[in-house]
Length: 116
Image (cartoon, rainbow, N blue to C red):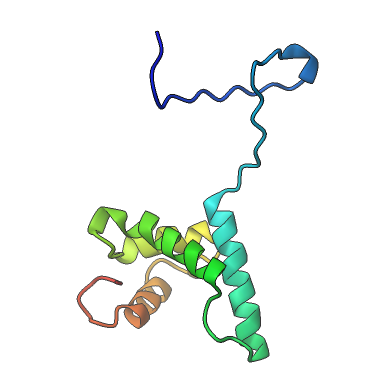
C-alpha cells in the first residue's frame, strides 16, 4: 500500500544500525529560536543607531512568525497570543497583569483589543 505525501521520521543513534534505501540529512531549526535570533540582531542594530528596518531575511521570518500566531484570528493577535509569542522568544513580561497590559496597549494602535 502506497500513500502520496506521507513522511516517516526515524531516529537512529548508531549509523551501523540503519540500512536505509535513502538518507535525508537535515538540521531542525526551531522557529521560536530563529525568531529570537532575528529579534536580537534587530535590537542590536537599533541600539547602535543603524536600524533601517528588517532585512529581507528578517522580514520573511517575522511574516512567518506572525502567520503562526495570528492564524487563528485571521492575522490578528490578542493579549494572550502576545504572551505566548513573548514567551516563545524568551522575552516574557515581568508579570502577566500590568506589564503585559502595558505592552499590549502600546501595540494595539486601533484600541480594538487586537494587534494587526
